[in-house]
Image (tube, helix red, strand yellow):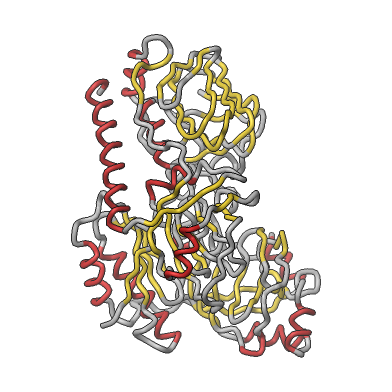
Length: 226
Length: 319
């Protein structure tokens, strides 16, 4: 089995699995099962395991790891199958696409030559998979954006994007859990909280989850907010 | 058992060793930009080494303690006083009830202040560190303000014994000082290193840009033309990672950095030099020196060994 392991500084490794599997859904499954297997192995000194589209990163405390820990990581990656043990969770995210929240609907319409209604219909009918969480706490990178909705990032990022903003950029879709600067095209807003510091797990979504957006009215949005 | 913030300085935050094991939720470890400095200061006051203390950046910080405590600090070039008494770097100092504590930047950088018992801010996701970007942790998820009243934790028995042994307000023992000013950061190759980019990174002097922060140092003065304009798939980054955005100005990620990034990772500053990276200020100049991965790991093991020896020495004397 081919796997490429690189050092990520002196206290972490990054394992790339892209050469093993060519289709992206199979690759993500392989990545998630690899991350889960390494976590379950509970190797001494391993302090964090995280994954993204095609790689798994393992962070360790150098003073706690055993001499042959790299070999053990290799072994646990090799033993990880390509199946995820749990069923994919389905999460529905309500989105209000009203003008007041859809800051870039017009920009996306100009880029794609689609009507705003057609954009909303495409965005809310697609099935997405959470590839990874990152950029900020709880921010999901969603794979599965319809081809017709591929629009580049804003030329100049906004200094402030509101929490709950539902956005797209190139082949990706996402949701801003917190107010932050950002350069994605904002299509609407969800009243759901994607990052909750006092809950376990602290994020609404986990890598591997299936996500669908559902259009709601402004009135429904207000009810959710309460 | 509180300490009053009379004058909050600028971007003073509550920090500990950060949040462990939460990268998969997008939560950055964060914590003190130079965890080793904070850990040494904590050991000096009899705390567990990752107890929450204060990270000071610049501006004059003034505190008033309402309890008898011990204080120690480490980091850059600061003048620290308890009352009139000057407290040298990496020494323990007695703080009597209602004494004023003052931290004044000289040439500055960053300093970490430990108080026996620690800052007892609420623990969120396993840590008391302030995440300024996501606005949680520390004291109300923000930098300190004038008038804040910070609760202190309960002192350890070790702290009480250490305090009794401090002869004339300041200890006659000290912790080893690891962060010495220099102009070189040692690096190891990153996965997107190539000899062309590498030779440019090593041949030039860079200047720390004004828009540097706890997430990263942006470096100007020597643009490096990226070999490939291909967008990479986003993946994990780490404190120390040197990313090369298309602009050609490298960014050295620091402890407050995000969890994943899509720019090429050309190199990594070694962990033992991150304490010095945390001292760099806008307009400071910096060079890089390449070493091998095994040497970087060896240096880190030696550093941790020295810290363990210091801790064992303190415990043998006061434990």
